[in-house]
Length: 341
Image (cartoon, rainbow, N blue to C red; front, side, top):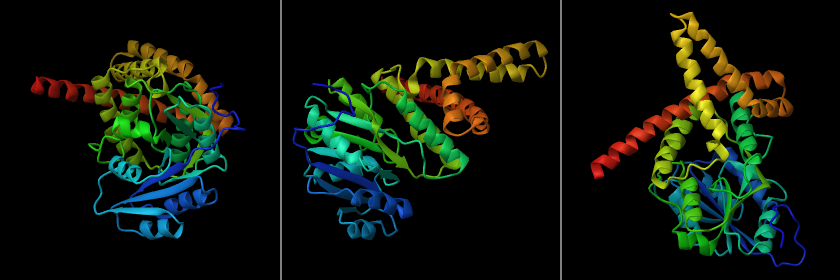
């Protein structure tokens, strides 16, 4: 039997899918999410919304779109909310969606077909599409870069993804669901994926299963989320599980880019007093451009040359704060290990 994600189904019965959305003050983006799902709901699908505290009309919006609504009295994070939604789900497949994405016309049918065709598949993750909802540069860059990362990653995945990720209900229950220690949107989905792989379950990255990300990123929100809610806890997770896999954001090219970015930065600073170090800086710049040329050509194709040129400093900043977060996370993990030892 073929294991290709996009292959059509003809004779296998479709599993029931429970769509689970955690939401905290979802606003207009959440209403757009609900609208995109409502268009494709049928008897093989159920929609569950878990209102994770908040003060807006998310509860009423969900009910208006026919969702089964579970209200939590205070904010406990998406991990807890997803677990509560999964506990009342009736579907064979749990499809976790963020409250700021919209589904494509074939997203749900693809998920049903893939699981129906591959009985040994425990979970799958999809991808953001190449047309982000927010139009400002930072949102376009970040969401397109996420699209590129998934579209160039390995099909046999090493992690899970809560924005567009589906898992068999019995597997989710057996593995214990999401770790509720993550009380804010963080790496609770990555951690779940690591546990799935460690337990021997198969996860597939299905690049044709796509959703559109609507989130608008600004400088402060991006750096805060990337550094404190992703890079730092991910570093500690890497040390805990020792799963430094050459895929997604952890490719060898990315790790080398971090080294060249810091070397170039320090050499450039020293070159202000000793011009001999300017050559080292130029060499680092050249290597960064060569190692990441596929990324920059991708942005040229998807947008234009000027857009790609604006991407370069942001991409190099990404290497710098990722490296800094890895160093800080490593120190934090080692200190806690010493205290507990």
